Length: 142
Image 1 (cartoon, rainbow, N blue to C red):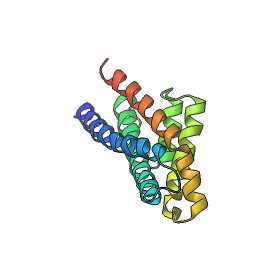
Image 2 (image 1 turned 135 degrees about the vertical axis):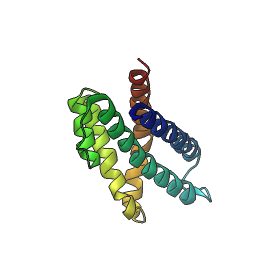
Image 3 (image 1 turned 45 degrees about the horizontal axis):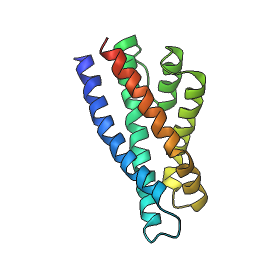
């Protein structure tokens, strides 16, 4: 049952990640003077938020299934464990902590400086989540 649960969470996450990529591509095509710029930017932030939430939950399920670790209640605890079991390296750990912290700021996205901070790193976060999910998929299919 455990592997099936991880696989199902990965499938849902990959679908969500595609929605993030769709708006990310669109956001990179527009300039701040574009009439729907704020709408696209806010959509990007929202999709980043739910992808980040889903991502750490996929990591948690994978770590529980693959490594038998069972007490992972927060995103930062999951990231620490992912680092400890060599699923991510130190640079990735730091970048993912930034993503989690930025995700926590999304409730303040109505503040222009916070919104600008978040959108600056979404593309990097997207790429990193994609790489790690591919690595997890490879490990599951071994």
